[in-house]
Length: 422
Image 1 (cartoon, rainbow, N blue to C red):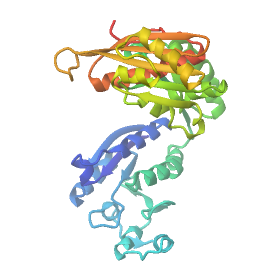
Image 2: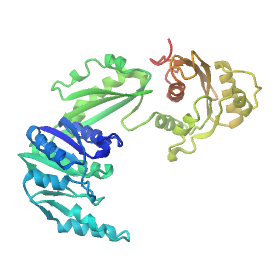
Image 3: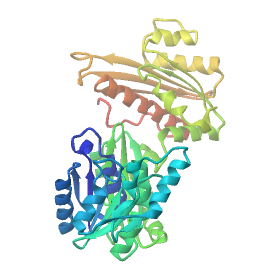
Image 4: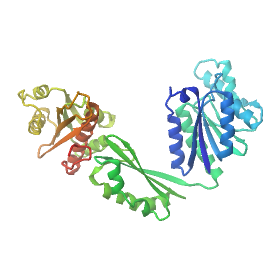
C-alpha cells in the first residue's frame, strides 16, 4: 500500500510554522508497518489543492490530508474534497449538534461560521474528533482513499492513532503489530554504534527487524523496529536481539524506551535511600534542574550550588579562595559537601576554559573536572570537551550525570567517550 501525507496551510508552506504534524504521522505510520511514499505541502489555494488531490489520487492508495477543516474562509478541505470527488456538500446534523453543545458547555454561543465545519462531502465516512470542533472524514477520489484530519496537533494525533491507523489496517487487508524498542546512549557516535551493532538486523531471519539511529547531541537514540502478527511473536523476536544490543553497547546505554538518564540516577538514589548535593560550574544549574524535575523524587537532591566563579563555590563550603579548577580541588569540595550538607553523595563539576581565537570559536575547548563521592569512596573524571560554549555546557552536563549514574550502579567512571579531545 502506497501512502501519501498531504499537509495544507500557507503558514506551513511559507515556513512560518514548523510542520511537526508530518513527522508525527510519518513516524506512526512506519511504526505500524506502512510505507510513506510522498509528503506534500500545499497552500490555502483552491486550484492548488484540487491539483494536489488529483495528483495524489493517481499515485497513492491512501492519502492523509492534514489541516483545512476549520471555520474560516481559508479552510478549504471539505469544499475541495467534494469538488474533486464530484459530489455536493451536505450538513451532518449530528456533528453540528456536537459543536453547539461544545460551545454551550463552555458558556459560549457558537459563531455562525462554525456551521461550515459540519458540512461534509456527500457519501463520505464520518471520523469522530472527541476533543475538538473539526471532525474528520474519509472519501474515495479516483479510486484512492482520502482521510481528512484537523491541523491541531493533539486532535490529529488522537484521530490518527485511534481511528485512521485501524482503518488503514483494514484497507491493507491484514493486521500487523509493530513495536519500537529504543536504547539511549551517551558517549558513542552514530558511526561507532553502527559498527558495534553490525549484524543485529540479521538476527531476525524473516527480515522483519530494522535498525535506525537518531542523533541529538549529546545522546544517541538507537531504535529497533520489529513487526509481527502478534505481540507474542514480537516478544520472541525481541528477547535475544535486545540482549545482544545491551552487550554490544555496554556501559554506554544510559536508559531504554521512555526512561532518561536522570531517571536512572534518581531510581538508584531511591534504592539506597540516598540524596545528593551538587556543585556546578559552567552548567548554569542544568544538572540540578534535570534531577529536580521529577516530583516523585523531590527528596533525592538536597541542594545545588551554582556559580561561574570557583572561589564562590569554595566559599559555599568554607574553603579558601584561590584554589582554581582541578580534579584535586573538586575532590576537596566533594569532601566538604559530604561533611557540611549531611548527604550520602556529592557531585562536583569544575570547568577550565581553553580559548582559541574568539570566545565563541568552535576550536575552543574546556577541561571538565568531575568528582563523585560518598562516605566510603571517591571517583574522579577529567575530560577535555571541544566546541562552542553552549556545546560544552550541554556535553559537560551529560558527562556529569553519566559519571553519577556509573558511580551509583558500580560501573567504571573513567571510560572514555567519543566526544572528548583525545
